[in-house]
Length: 280
Length: 286
Image 1 (cartoon, chains in turn red, blue):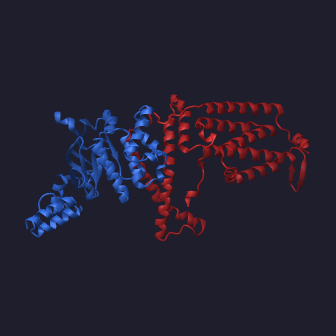
Image 2 (spheres, each protein chain N blue to C red; image 1 turned 90 degrees about the vertical axis):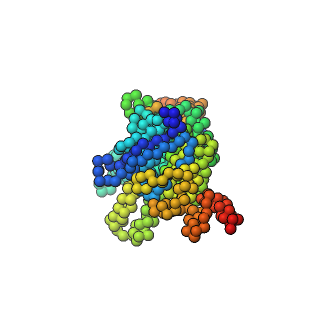
Image 3 (cartoon, rainbow over the protein chains, first blue to last red; image 1 turned 60 degrees about the horizontal axis):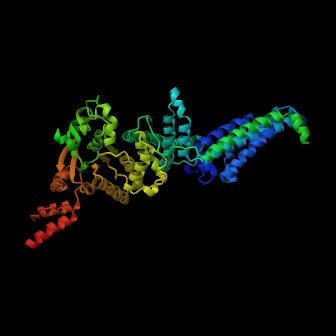
């Protein structure tokens, strides 16, 4: 039942994007998130959206899957759009009744925001769709390795991430087992009021927590046996190496930044009234 | 100190309590002395709570004795300067394979030990491939551990220890959570390590049949070492073994019953072939 969780899911395919160095993917995702916030007119935004679509297309991840990733945030998009429509009062008044006045500016602002949030999510999910968890932790590890000079040991953080990823399926199996065990003793997880069902989670989480703690102790012993000492002087078997394609995409990322800045300057901060008038 | 060279593991009058402040708590291991020679295959037998798992943790300094000393190649496990060298010399494989695998991909898990030791990437790659081949898991090197069977996971855990090139491996009930097939695979892997690579094996178990495959058996009961000898010697006293709460192999049991009926069976009676031979002798005589 818990196997349907798809947060941070990896979509194993053999595309150019999948083969990229994880550091490059981290870089362009991070850059994209900043630039889509920086983009201040519809042309810049369209440029960002186009670039995101190109990445999606090249990655071969089905568009359907990408759109599915937006489902959890539909609620947020609707609420923010509504707030924009109700509170932004620029441009031409379109509808006016009671205390509500809907303006062209509000609607355009809502459209702008919807695209901004959606593609922010699209690019973030593209990162996890195209990068395996191990590759991701490797990338993060190498990206933040310089932090050790100022006393932040990122090695430990990536170790924690790796262990968390490693134990998710194990703990999910364990939850399933505990549910079956409790059900066989007459526990009922499916019916009753929400409070009753929430209360039923106690006999689920207590054994889970207990077992997870016991596992942690055993894992600590096993790691000690394998000479783990907090990652000091650690080497990596599959060391990451920048290849030609990685340099190319890095260059493209900088070109993208330049593109957004140029379009921002050329078309200026969009004026709702102007935008509406020219659209009509 | 000439004989120190071939003694890999030495327990010298070791006593250990899990909470050393609590005087009332019975020790998990008490006044235990034991010497393991290089290249030996020793089984440690005992029922639950006899202190045999504690023996595993004492063997490479995961826990240190309350009194007495444990030496690995002459290095005291209490000396923290020796810590890394000791863990590299004596590896431990635990009961639950799930709780020993660290990484999300088989080969990266096997690489974990050598990586921690700071070994060159090319050498790690060589060791990982070799270790996976020894345990017969090479073709699974890119798999995710949670999708493997129990026996396969346990073999990955063993490969993870082999990759550090230890001289001795302590197996703490490695087969207890496995199905018969997985159990056989792990047994075979252990035997290969001992025979082909000359790795000293200390095999902790409560399965009689498995213990019989060792050259030497050490029996623990209630924190004490009570018997030490070859499988044949150990199982010749069926009644004593039973009194320790342990099972007796069927062959030994049959030999015992024949003895009770005043049929004087002698020689090797532990393996099926041995028993058949001994019986044949009696029948020929009669």
